[in-house]
Length: 329
Image 1 (tube, rainbow, N blue to C red):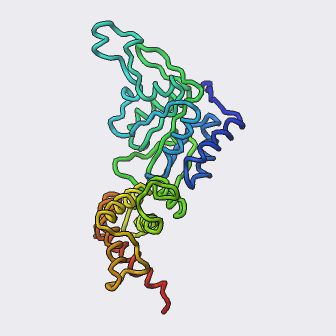
Image 2 (image 1 turned 180 degrees about the horizontal axis):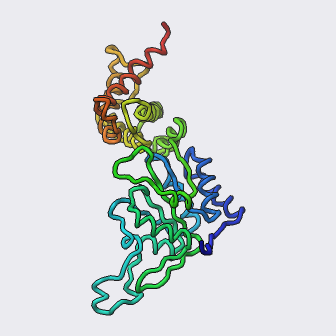
Image 3 (image 1 turned 180 degrees about the vertical axis):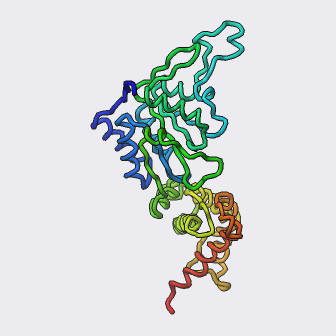
């Protein structure tokens, strides 16, 4: 199996990193602990979950705290072993011949030489021969390159993959040998409160933020954006709903529309013909949702619906039906 230099980190170092990184991620305490424990123990890990669930945020923060590179690669059919490893610059080879100086590192070699995290998004879209190249690097912590020699990884080098379990178009089933070399963590969506905190932080609409909206309007906008976005994940006619990134965009687009239309109050309760302020606010969120969320919703082909129709129904449930159901009588 070869000898691995794992770069295991001591407990005090891991605790310091945990305390620092914990301030940058919201609602991910358990996942942060598990990822940090795995990489600090010298293990490679596969993260499985939908987009927008803070996977890369956690990894970038850990890499930054360790002071190592974060090398991002998009997994797809074009990710060949040659692209992953790198190669000699053809123009320089014609002038100088094959020399170490004219070898251009690919992402795998760069991560190994510099002791960084090689993060491969859409891991299960990469070709089998590319994955086999990764397996060699994982097992031996070395790769042999023709006319370049053997590259040995620094102790902090890790391979980390991510997969979206809801997307099966253009993906391949990973072999047992791949799974056997990875630790694995399933990462789901944060809860509603955590997503509201993320929006407050990322949009500047939280306490002390730079938003021009009133506190009441900002609070309502964040709450409604999270509710509408989360509802896209809970319907039977959607194969995949929007991540919190959609909620962030919804909030920012809606804020611009509210300012453009001079709307400074969210109104109260359900939408009625008599409450013009509430209607204008709700209509603005529907328009913003069509822009921010429709492209992020993947409907079930057998359902015979469209993202726009799904959003219309979600909007009606949230602003008309559900508030009415909560009223006396």
